[in-house]
Length: 227
Image (cartoon, rainbow, N blue to C red; front, side):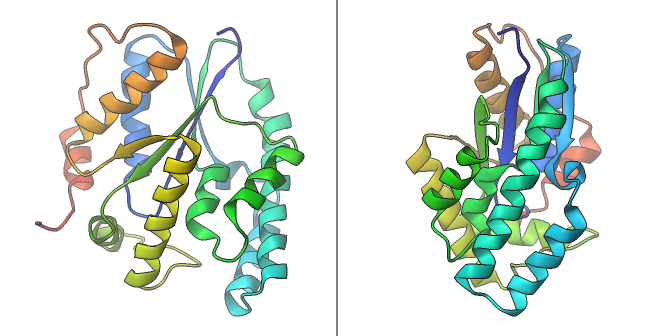
């Protein structure tokens, strides 16, 4: 593959996407791969306007407003697709923290099939590999609560909402054939799962790639309650 490989990691809050993305980046770079790490929220040139609209939706949840939020996100992704993704060097691997699959978790009124078509119509780049990162809802809820910034969600405030969000996202993963990564064990296991999927798309063997994870990072990852 000569163009940059585009990989998105999506999922509900607290599933360990950022920690996993950091670990995957470390392993790929150790294998001499050029990795570009992006975050949708930090790449969005209209972030202030986007979040203002999201906050309006939270106060007044209507289909019209949620559709407007979906359109705003799609417009932002179209801009990122054209001005950021398209300019990455050939042969590199782009890892992004969230893309349109996350709408399957956080949008409640507009069907995801409609959201997906909206993104396609706006020429939002389709990832070469979608990775859905999930855990049991009680685990991700506890992990999110243990973080310094807490849940940090504008739209999810209660455990039952988080459970519904997780179920909706897992249905979308199954419906669209995305890669499901259950991030409930060790960070090494989850990392090698994602690495193996990336190398499958690249059509090159995993070989002797090893995972050496910062133990402090692994402890941050393992904040789940005993089951």
